[in-house]
Image 1 (cartoon, rainbow, N blue to C red):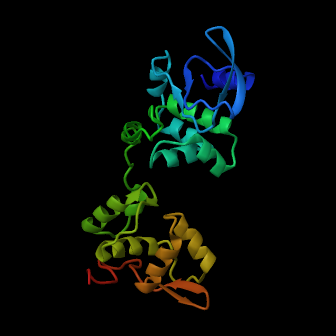
Image 2: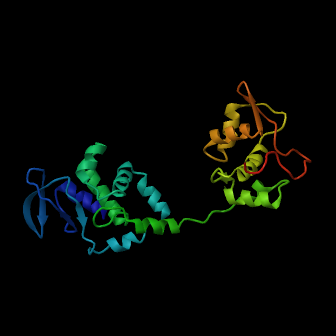
Image 3: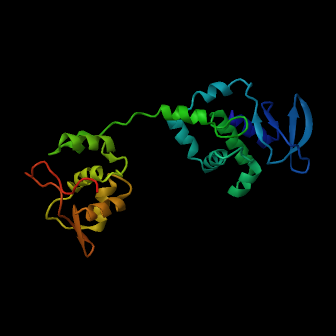
Length: 253
């Protein structure tokens, strides 16, 4: 569908499934054929390109997009910008093209593609229903990998880990201190007692678990799991081999 529309625009032909509003003879002029009659027509880039949803094929295309297809679609910066603009109101193609420094035709074609995917409605607003459906189709979290909860952890601690880990990734840093201490102590196990670590090595290890390695590093130092001096870190807290099942740190303060 998009390829055909692009060819039509390049050739100066407006496909019957497109309607251009706010006719402006002084704007970009193209040669178009409507119902076999040649007619010189101009349109303003601000015009909303409205897809005739009664045209066969659009409804079926809308039902085909899945979360993976959505990600592929929004990798294009123009499409992503359109969706961002559509989240706050109808997309003005001329204004958006000017802001992006893109050709109006490029924006119009991107709008067509997003309409095909069902991500924009007839008014060129964000189709929230499609986004909700895509969200519901995302795979459920795997839960914590068994390697995360291996070790001398009590059942309550293991429950906290299962809540905040998806696979081997920390989904969020707990706001509640008692839960955060459990997570920090688990991360402290990644550092061998007696070994000195450069800051870049600490960062590398922590970013394997969560993107905000700086916050984790700071928490580990503040709570006494790591000690830092002259840019070097070493483990000074948490459970060590053969320790009983208790922990460094206290409950919420």
